[in-house]
Amino acid sequence: MKALLGLIKPVSGEIKFCCVKHSEIGYLPQQTDIQRDFPASVWEVVISGTLGKRGIKPFYSSAEKKLAKKNMELLGISHLKNHSYQDLSGGQQQRVLLARAMCATTSLLLLDEPVAGLDPVVTEEMYKIIKKLNDKGITIIMISHDIDAATKYASHILHLHNEPLFFGKTEDYILKGSSSFFKGGEKE
Amino acid sequence: MMTLSELFSSEFMINLVVRALVVGFLVSLCSSLLGVSLVLKRFSMIGDGLSHVGFGAVAIAAALNMSEMKLIFSIPIVIATAFFLLKLGNKGKVKGDSAIAIVSTGAVALGSLLYNMSGQRSTDICNSLFGSASLFTIGDIDLILSLVLSVGIIILFVFFYTKIFAVTFDESFSKATGLNTSLYNTLLAVFTAVTVVLGMNMMGSLMISALIVFPAMTSMRVFKTFKSVLISSVIVSIVCFIIGFFAACLLGWQTGACVVTINLIAFILFHFAGKSIAIKKNV
Image (cartoon, rainbow over the protein chains, first blue to last red):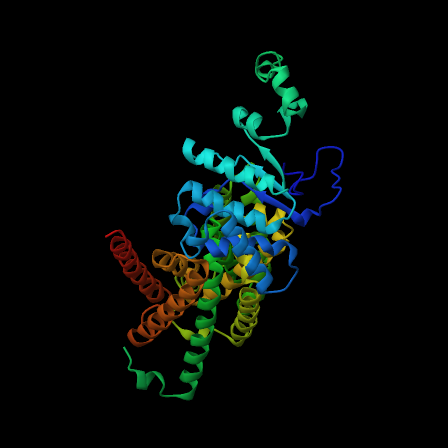
């Protein structure tokens, strides 16, 4: 994941992108404890997603403001615009970060355990939102420990356990029986 | 004790006071801006560690009979330490906070040992720990350096404000979307190091990190957006400095201790103001 984003160098081999540039990937990282009490308005967080493609221009342009507004509407957080990020619930914070990621991309989103620490109801909502974005034509790569949700929403699955154990269409993954990877896949 | 009119009685005194006031004003401004970013990145103790290293460097400069050159001597050392600590903060076997403890106490120990061996009076060392009570120690070079530093920091925060926000809020996201995060971290380290060294003279190396931490913490009690916290920090820092500075001049007390005490009072006031705002919101 980090290699894909260019945060670290791959251990071996190289990563090739066919049609997106590095700066055009939207990324939803796991939350850090720095963010939990960070003084920032929702607006400040969302619009900071546009920074990557902007070069050295110091201030936000009206096009960037429009993009941020559009993505806030898309994720249903427009009413929170002037709220403080630290006062929001976990699910709302996650939606704010997703809106920020959407500002950075038009085609590819990388999500790192987007539902970690969310309760079941909010988790379900989150998956619905991600599905909605996916249906709009955005490629989504998601790291998840939630196999049920993965088989329900994803089109392809890459199952890793120290090494790649499976990559292919979700139907094939279900046919093979995902549980077999946990029982039969262990080498001990 | 002296009155304001006595303070400004001779041209010589006026020059000294104005010079100290300007340097202190600029250092307060710089430290408050840097402080917001450092506090939020959980780097508050770096200011403290750097000031101890600065103390060590000043003591060594004094031991080598280079007291006039102490700024020139200590700035490169402190900048190098800042780099080292920021790098360690990210990774490494020795974790950030213990690394700071090791580096800062080690520097103090080495500095005072060398100083003792050189057999000089210990008042200088006391001054650099607690800040000097006299204004004579602030030279033209302090003034020039603090002017250059403030211009640099103001340019950074006005024109690259949005990027500083992004890098502070979420470094890995910023890096993933193509921001040069290590450039911003480097600038932060260099500016912090120079601010600490400049402020040490007046504030004392034991208390200079207060200028970095207090204004940001105070403002965060009440304000909840990045921009408002930045603006409030600058105002709080400068107001506290001016009150503390004149109180110290008029009463003949140490500037550093006075300024930090005023900062502490401001923090307590803001803390209760923030609490009462939160209660009002809930009602």
